[in-house]
Image 1 (cartoon, rainbow, N blue to C red):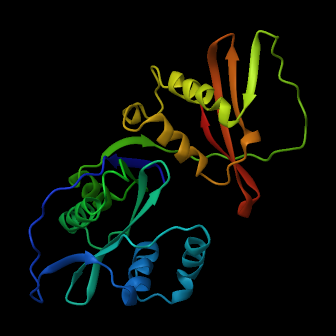
Image 2: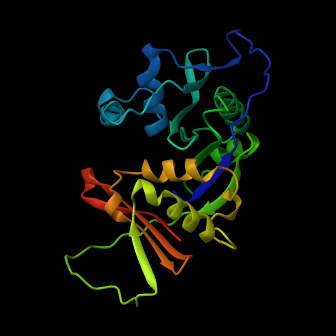
Length: 258
């Protein structure tokens, strides 16, 4: 996934949708059709066996990911597009959309994503985001039509980590702090300072308050206060690094570096 698009969640009135058999109907997915819609999102086929989505359903139940905001655009009994919005700590939400099977369905994707985002309470969700692969032009067009804006191309990188202790060569004018609740202001100050003249998603700056940003970072993987660091030179923040555990993969994610 390389392209991230986002918009602030909002509410607006929307026209009723026709219910005749030839019309495209956009609505929340009923519990009995949940697996079909999820299968469509993750495989592009609503008739895949349940085993294809069982791991995700089990993961969602174990991590309190709610599947309440599952939407679909259907014509007669055929699913044309599906979307799942998963709220996250920090008043943000991730939008998952099905891969497009028909290159003419941009308007359907736009209507579906708009309707799903409009269902969100703006007091609880201030920012909605989606990740799509390069070349997903229909999905990209649908997101843009729904008010999303392209902000970044993401490149994921990884390396092996070896148990080698190397002391950080800083003199005593620098102080390093790990996370404690009483250090929250230090982390807030360091994170906000790192946004000045940033080239890392500058359009995100100012969309959320710092407490929401910190809550979102904490919710990425498993938070360990010993893996969050700030570096100060005197009274001035000069660096911040946030690492979270991903125990199911035996990895550590670099959540933020500023």
